[in-house]
Image (cartoon, rainbow, N blue to C red; front, side, top):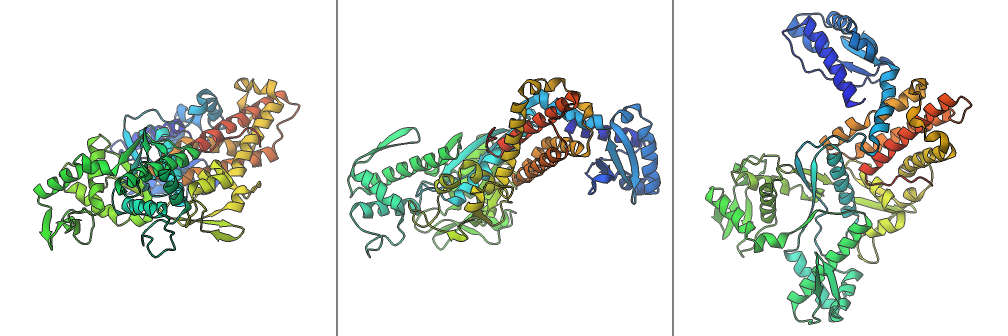
Length: 560
């Protein structure tokens, strides 16, 4: 139901409780009954109050119902209120209350279900791939999850900042450089002199050829030109990283994904932020020297780590979680006191270490900062067989492969329709199918079908704002009206639980409710008043489907 209606019901119940038990001020929660015939919402407030009030819960529930329904304002909203079971109160709203959602949708249009700005800034960091190769299907799942979570929080009233953290430092970048160098010198991956940890995809050959040809690539707002010097590993590294950052930008563009900022891991070292974080932890007494290494007392910092961790190895290099601590300190210092990191499940072990490091800084950073969404990898199936390789990448399917095979809409929807922490199989054949078994097609078809209905009655459809919506009383109409009203609360719930798949499931339910209504109640009828009312309902459904699809970054086609 609409938040305004929910607040009204809570207020009416609170007034009834206060009349009966003025000394009590319970938190009243509403929930949907498991069975629709029990009403629109239920509350257990009588059971909650029975013991402290010394009352029988069913008798108290009946007194609350009697008091509630004696309120003239309640009679305008509620058709009935009944006691059920051990003391539940089931409420059923009047048809007019449910019909009101059409007026709200028509008034708010594309803004329907969006909350006003709440003044809270939120940073969401996602994808954050090493610039060592094309983005793979795991990155695609992360991109879909991250972008949807950003869209959900924006709709929930937050000011959202999207950030991509480039891991452009460390051994993987060195492996990239020596791989390009080897291919540029004509050394094949099967040759014994090829680097053992080298990258083997065809894209390495492309980088090597462009480096030899002294080409220029554009990345991060600047041009990088290759020198062609095969003995200058620094030049090769610089060009290779720029080349792959440019390639990843193309991947993200194909996914219609834009970031507010790209943050370089290397800048944490050049700007002294890593050294600063280590110095603070040392001054605060959370580090110690042992076996030539610097350790962090993570076990003393209350984040659940089972043993202390090495920060600086005996060779002077830092372990991978140390720049992460410095990076999250940067987030905090930039004013992002609410942050979400979306990463692969293989990063699970770093959570306690990063949070421990942040606690050791003594900056009043909450223990659960940042929040994490960890996703599992994706298997790609085609023709009943797993697809494991890509011509460009060599050993894995890329994000661009998926988009080229099935299109951006299907990639986005399929990759967020399951909880992030569950394994997922991406079925190419299903994503290409045109039938009810394909969820994104099923939803988009509902939208396109409504658009055709409105085109076929274009002159009358322009008058939907004048429709007599009180005529919408059929059971399937009531079901559809109630479903439309759920979107504002669904957005808040999906954002709170970091679960964009809830919107995907809800959209499937909405599409099913629409198709059921369309099949049960004819729209093109002689009764012009009823026809106009049903066109208004269809148009409202179209708008809500479009709004919800936009939360997932999926288009709402007018024709299919």
